Image (cartoon, rainbow, N blue to C red; front, side, top):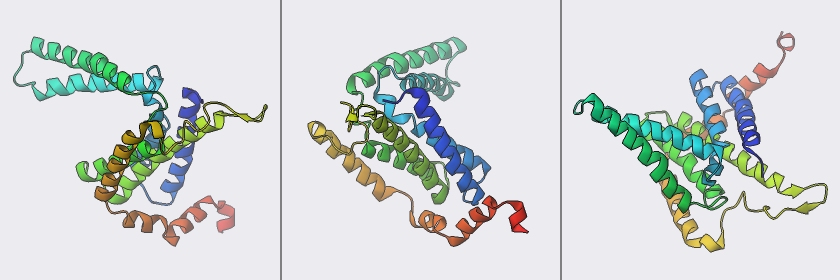
Amino acid sequence: MANFRTHLTGGFAVSGILGLVTYKAGLVNANEFLMCVLAGTVGGLLPDIDSDNSIPIKMGFDLASLATGFALIIHWRSELSLLSMILLWVVGYLIMRYVVFSIFTKLTVHRGIIHSVPYMSVLALSLTCVNYYLLDTSSIVSWFYGAFLFLGSMIHLGLDEAYSVDLLNRRLKRSSGTAMKFYKDSQRYYYLGLYAILLMFIFIAPPFDPFFRKINDPITWWLIKDSLLPEVLMR
């Protein structure tokens, strides 16, 4: 299985290159380009959130715990004294960091349902829907964010599968097939529920046609071609 550094580098490198192509084609602006690269990099770490001792899950829960504490005191700031707000922040942080984290780690198994293609598809569509419906982002850019997150997660799963092949001894390790999976019979009911959620997100997802037409527009690819040609050849 690939380590944290490999997943981070792989997700960042691929999303960075494709992000530049997308930016040079005029499909996204500078800020949206950075968000695409960020989404791809995060996607490159996401499948390991089911590992109790992984760096992504620890970092994620640390940030979520801090954010939860601040969200609580911001919500009740006008009703509480300074001491009460401090206590509320501490309680919110501790509950999220230790109670919720403990429950999450007990309910998840490394390389379980989270470490699968349909689960990553759900997360990518969730990001697309959140940006479109809640953050008032255009459908095209929302789809780009979701696509980059999904791409990063596929890089992660692909790297894990690649590391399960022992080229020297020409054999597959026991971990082969446990990374990039679509279904597992021992978890059939979980997968059925997961695919039901996936269908729901597909149904409520923002319009896909504008995004599809944009990336298939010949003018888009002419812009990329022109940006790649040396200036001397353009004269």
